[in-house]
Image (tube, rainbow over all chains, first blue to last red; front, side, top):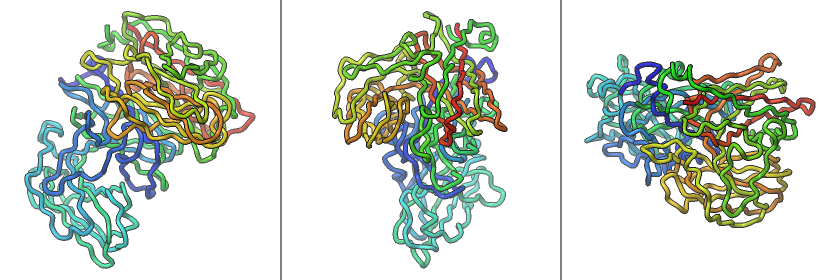
Length: 278
Length: 286
C-alpha cells in the first residue's frame, strides 16, 4: 500500500538503518567514490567486481549468507520509502545514497573493442511503476586501480528510457591511470535527448599509447535516492520527510553510500536512514 | 498500542527525558590528536544524570537499563509503546564556533573493563537484549546494531588493540570484527568496530581479545542508534537545535531503555571553555 499522507507515514513500519565506515579511503577532491568495500557497518563487501561480464547482474540488498556489503531491508510486503536521513562526516563532503540497479564487470583494462552483452537481466521491478526508466544514470566504477597508461577511453552503448536501442554515451576523454584509482566513480553522459536507460548493450574500450598495464572496472546503472552536504569537518544534518521527498525503494534495493569529499580523504561518514513501509 | 495517526501523536501521553545536563571539560572532550575526531560518551561525566561507571563484568556482560546509574530516568510505560518524537540540544558555550555532532542511542549490552594485555576473554551466559529491540515478523530485529569500544578510565598510554568475537544478526556464531587500535584516548572515548563482511548487526558478544602493549582499561558495548544531530554555533553565539518527529523517525524506545548521548567534539578547544550540554528528548507513549 502506498503512503499517501501523514497518518500513513506515522502508522508505517519503520526500519532504522545505520551505515558507517570505520576506515577512510584515499579519494580525489570533488570526485565521487564508493565505500562499499571499506570496513564498517554493514561489513565491507568482499569485492567490488560485479562478477559477470556477459550479461550483467541486478544487485540486491544484503541478505544472510551474502557478503555484498549492502544493508538488509526488512519489509517483505507493501511499498517502502526512504523517509528520513541523519548524516555526518569527519570531512567536508557530499554524500549520496543510490540504488544500484544493474552492474556488469569487472572488465579488464585491456578488454578493448566492443564487449557486447546478451540476456541482460531486467531491473524493471526496481523502478517506479515498473516502467519509468527516466532519471537513471550510467557510471563507471573502478574495481582495481589502473596502472601506467594515459590514453584509455570507455563508452557504453545502451537502450534509452523509451526502449530505443543503439544509443551511446560517447567515449570519455583520454583517461590516465592517476585518475582511475580504486573505488572511483565516473558518470558517463547520456546521448542528447535521453533522460534514462533501460538496458546496457555494450561496453567499448580503447587502450591507446601509453597503454594501461592493469586495472578493472564495472559499469553501473543507478537510481539516485538522496544526497546531502557536510559543509565542514564534523558536520552534517538531518533530512526529514519533507527534504528527502520519500523516494520509493524495494525490499531488494541494493543501497550504496557514495562520498564526494572536498579533499583527498573520504573521511568517516555516518548515515542513519529510515525506511518506512506500508 | 502503536501511534498510527497525527491526531494520536498530538494527543498521546508524553514524557520529557533529560539526557544530559552536564558540564564537559576540554580535557574530557579533546581528542588526543588534532587530526582525529573521536566520539565521546557523556556516561562517565557527572551532572544530570549522575556519572555512571563501567559494568565491571568481563564474564557474562551486562544489559544496562534506565535504572542503571548514569542512565537518564524514564518513567515506566510498561504495556504501551514509546517513541522518540523530539530531541533538543543546547550548550552554554560556543567552543570557538566549531560544530559538534551527537547521536542518541540505547545502550543494550556492555562488558569490561579489560586491561591492556588481558588477552582473549570468552564470555558465557550472556544476558539477552532481545526485549529492547523492535520486532520484524514477531522476531527481534538485530540488524542495525553496532559494536563499540569504550575507554573505562584514565588515559590509554601506548597502543592497544581490541578485537571482538560475536554472533551476527541471524544467529551465526564465530564472527569477528576487524581490530580497533588506539592510543592516547581518554575516559569516555568510543570507537566503532567494523563488522565482518556481510554482517549488519549483532546478536551476542562472544569474546573480547585485548592485545598489544600500552596500559589503561577499555570495554565493549552494543548499541542501537536512535538518531543524530548537529550542533552548530553561529557567530560565536551558542545555539539550540531541535529535531521533531518528522526528523526523529519516530524511533521506538522501551520503558527500560538505557539512553546514552554521545558527542563528537572538535579538536580546537580552549581550556577556558567548559560548556554545559543540556539535552532532552520527548518519548510519546500510547
